[in-house]
Image (cartoon, rainbow, N blue to C red; front, side, top):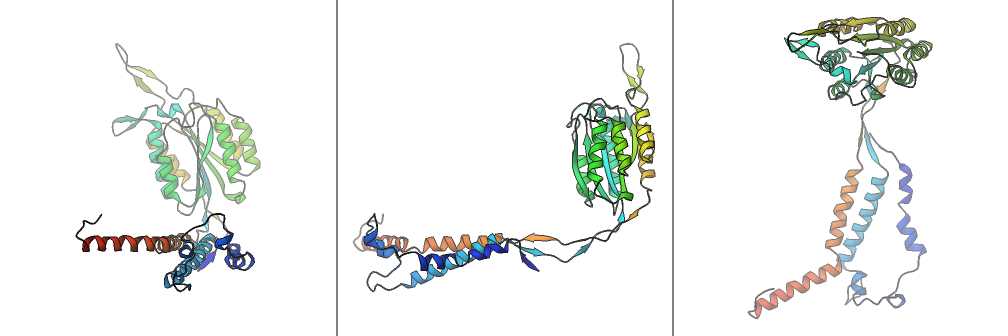
Length: 348
């Protein structure tokens, strides 16, 4: 069906009539500027003094323009049929670390070393695709934590925004506590039994307004369950002048804090040292029991205001074309052209 978003705009429909009835009629002799073509501009025939056919057409066009503009201002919109939204599912916030250390190339995929963030995008992207019926939200954090997508059933958009995330856009440091606090804020309005946060990081909290454990205590009070994942290889070969040197690229990973966060909120901590282990962890998390939620419906809405607006623009163009002054000018040019042709003079 079609509804008007701003129906009060229709109250302006009789405004031209009120102006016509209440304001005095303008006369040539009262004008400050004397126009020699006043009678033509007033849309009256010069010889008979009666409204011409062009005048009647222009009046109809002006009425049409006014009606179309008012209808467009009322914002008509088409309301589609109700669509039932899924009733089973969880409210999952995904917090992904995109700090500078996520660019470390210590993940082996097909005999090729790739960055941690590239592996996370692939694994978490597949996890998002499998979450049919869940509301998913995405938080990205580095020096700052920000909400990339709110809780939504649109898994395609969540995955697309994750895949398009550049490394280090949120800063080079790691604000784990701020990411947890932001997730709790976004989950507060959801049913208490379905609030879940899956947090992935490869480092330790070294910046932010709140510490991870303080944020975890608040999350526990709000009934938010946090699953933490520590990601990064424990061995990496660094080429040297004479021989390769083995280092631990995950030496800054604060596993103890991640364990305490999970224990405080009733979640679990898991360690992923490779792409395969990370995939296995998200497969386990994929087995969370669904939570029954209230039935919800969605009705698609499509704006229609541009149709009457386009009609008003078209009628305005016709109004300009049929203006008496323009018609008089065209007729004069046409006659001059005919006279010039009859006299053997070139048309100009």
